[in-house]
Every structure is written in structure tokens, then in C-alpha cells.
Image (cartoon, rainbow, N blue to C red):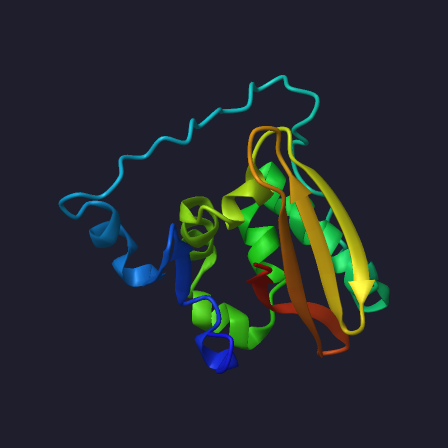
Length: 166
């Protein structure tokens, strides 16, 4: 995945192993696999920390900086607006991921990426060349840093892939 960009998003790191996302269910249900131990906390409907929907960039999309696009994508992820988050990906990234539902599955099932939708997460976002770096923290979980690889497409910034820094 690191050597060939066309493979980005097809592999996930699970414990000490890299696993194809298409084989993740089988890997996790194999004999001897560790049981799921991470608690899943659902947000309350009236929780003020959970916005109803992310504010879309709309007509401002072409003028938005890469950081603003990443912030909009993070807000969409956090609020459960998978269509909105998926729409901020580049065309090649959308083709790799399939559709918003598959994109949601990738994010939710990943030990690393799921921190982006975790209730109580805190993020720092800054620009690093043409990429955008996101550091996410959730109490009780290790700090995770992501590199959002950004590209200009049709006059606007789009997420072309996301790497987890090790």
C-alpha cells in the first residue's frame, strides 16, 4: 500500500498483521482470533457534542483550502453523514472505496480509522505541504496520526487517500 498508491484503502492493520479489508471478517473470526474487546459507545440523540449534520462546503468548495475540506470531511464522518464525507474524496479514491456504505464499513471496522468517529474524540488538523495531517485523540486509546493525501480535482481539494502514521 505504501509503495503502490492504487492499493491505498485496500489493506488494514490488525494487531501485528496487515489484512486485506475484503478478508477482515474471516481474519477476525478465525480459530484463535482475539475476541473484540473495544467497547462501542453510542451517542445519545440529545448529546450536544454530536452535530446533527456537518455544514457542507457547498458553493464555497472551490475556494476551500485543503484543511477546510479535511475539517468538513471529519465533521461529516463524526456526524454520520457518510454521503457527505464520501463526496469529499477524489474520483480515484471513490472508485477504490466503492460507495458511501462501503466507505462507512472501512472506517467503522478499522481499529485505526474508527477513532475518527469515536464519541469524545479530539482532533488537531494542520497542513503539511500538499497533505493535511490529523492527530486524533480519544481517552483510553492511543493517539493516532493520519496523513490525508490531498489532490486538486475539478478546481477543488479532495482526499485522495489517508495513511496512518506508525
